[in-house]
Length: 248
Image (cartoon, rainbow, N blue to C red; front, side):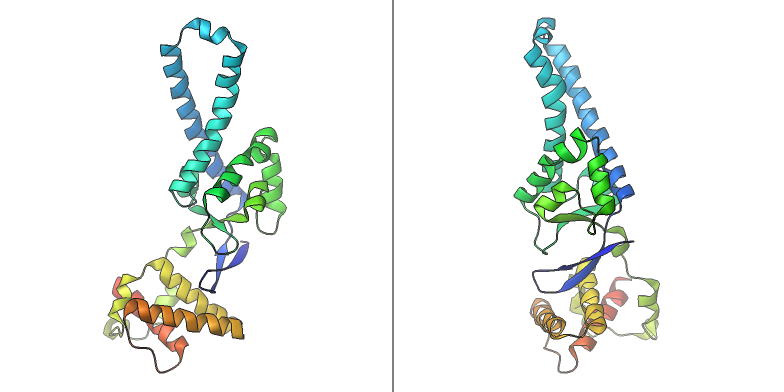
């Protein structure tokens, strides 16, 4: 599975698994079926309320059979990703999500670019161009992703801690959490902490050291606990152990 490293706004590098071509195709098919269902409903209503003479106009026909379905698909992708933070219904069902490569949250302009470039990526090329680019590019990007500086990542494998994480806690039943305040954090927060620790242990350079220090400062303020006197790595590992014990 291909992966990508993204530096967050807190200067912490997180490794994500990239969504593969199969997952993105299935997500697109689900979205296409939903758009098709809305289009059929629109046509049924239009046929009910409009007279037959309306359909004799070539302009009306072009709008109904050309602009409406294609425009509807782009509008669907734009609105669903904006309202669901990078997840259309298809992406949500496949457990994948749009993210920016610079660690910032995707904005309206990013989603708009991705939506508009569906015209080239999927409509005019029949999806061939998008498939070729996603399967051949290093970051699994189609044209819409390249212009918006985004890609699509997998979420499902990141939603739980591994068995190894739990087994590494000695005397689990008798373990007394030192920082019960950690319960206010989410699983994604703890995955960020775990990723930061692993990244520093793998690449112990000054940049990752600074990122750890900033992360510790942020967590101390957020949780309202005393600043750790010892190794910041041990503090972060303790938070991870406490979180697993409290939420298991």
